[in-house]
Image 1 (cartoon, helix red, strand yellow):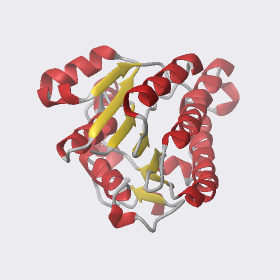
Image 2 (cartoon, one colour; image 1 turned 180 degrees about the vertical axis):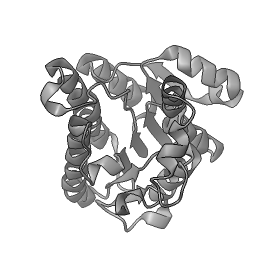
Image 3 (cartoon, helix red, strand yellow; image 1 turned 180 degrees about the horizontal axis):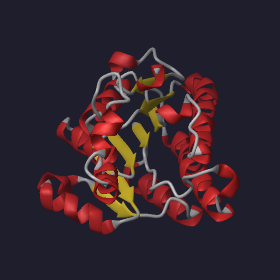
Length: 246
């Protein structure tokens, strides 16, 4: 049985990815900062009791070190890692006027955290293993009013390609997916805060005229980690309904 790690697996794309791997017969390990969200997911999907979940703040390097130590001791290796964890963006707005702390927080959460996880995952991998970083369409285009977030995702794209060239020498594939707008609890909350027309307004800007469903992103992740994609190295699979073309 293959061992899969999905970070940030308690909601949205992460939860759907955890469910999909579990339903496909993999042993899944996941983590998130909010244990209550995971308990809500468990209540909705009781089969997730078979998933090895640990509450964890990935910004704390000591917690991360203990977490990967736990994986090493209990599983010995990882076959697939999906670096998905990404909190709500704190640094929205005009870059020149944003608080320094919020910029720093976004940089740590969306660049340093997946970079740190990569560093711990690679030594636990053998030939045939793979890593998928969950980037964003904002990592391949400019994003005014979310410049630091966009910068972190551009950085993650560079990290993905650079590490891919190193890791493939050991038979480990590193790629990324770049979702566009995806209808997750985060967007549902935004809609409640901003008014009911938000969904329609955003959808009108997407050539496909709709949000992605989390399952569509999870399907792409699972395909990219499968043997059907074993010749794909250092690639970013854009899943955005054409948004980046506009």
